[in-house]
Image (cartoon, rainbow, N blue to C red; front, side, top):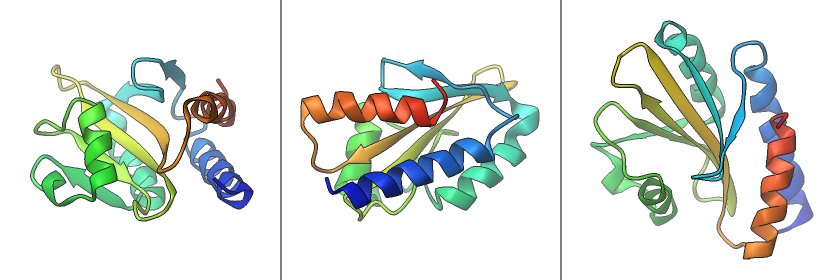
Length: 140
């Protein structure tokens, strides 16, 4: 991965993190190597508007089959979209891009989102370093 790709990822993550400042608190979800935030469904529209602004492509259980392979790989890694769940992405044709899983809870009162970068070409040691940087960008 080139340094320009990394600085662009850092910039995009910081912009997204700042957009959620005061709305969400982040923690690390080591199960999926993502940042995780949970919020009341009352804030659904505000959170979704921010996601739509920065991660403009939305996948659901009905259209995920038409997604590029890398998006389908993310979907598989996260356990596959179910009805009501969404997967937001920036441009998945890039060598690196951001994604966000949107998971409403069964109680209808809460929603969790999980955000992470996707890198097409990355080694295991690079991934560990990228995760450290990514956590820092989201204040973890």
